[in-house]
Length: 205
Image (tube, rainbow, N blue to C red; front, side):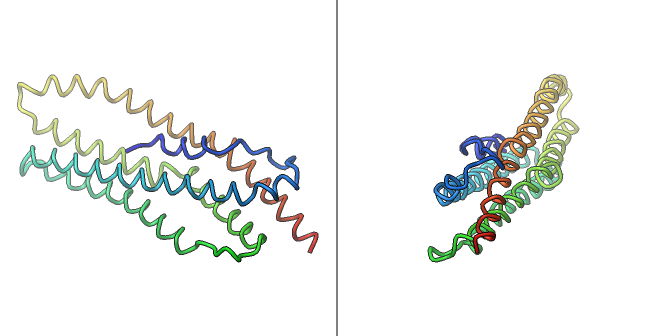
């Protein structure tokens, strides 16, 4: 799956200043940044769901090629479709929670803070709901193919696997590190900005 989409989502956002941000600037840019964040999350969810479908099709072809002995690949497909379903569910959730144009600034601010906290939790728990199912699915597919490979093809399969494992491991580490960085550099400072603006609005009221 396209794990780099997570990094792209946050790279599209300007680096927030944090608690030192100017209140007037926060007010002026709030709606623009809110819409931009919503749009990038739409792109992320659609891209990830599409990638999940493509991977599921590829696994299905591998199963078909293996024949009856490839039945464990069905478990891998279920895992990938589970992750795909999560992103589809995200689109449904955000559509249901969409605010109308007449919603007050404070209500929009409260909703944005809640959404940012939710996205923060997703990134910090990436292993539990995203990476682990993807790793498990990959292991199932490779194990099934290698266990049932003919003797003449076994050596080449093992050589490929020997090169694939370190590359795959590096990619997993990279995804984890990039998303941790996104929390530190993007989400936490943005939350500080939103909390500051919220406090100002409540104080003025």
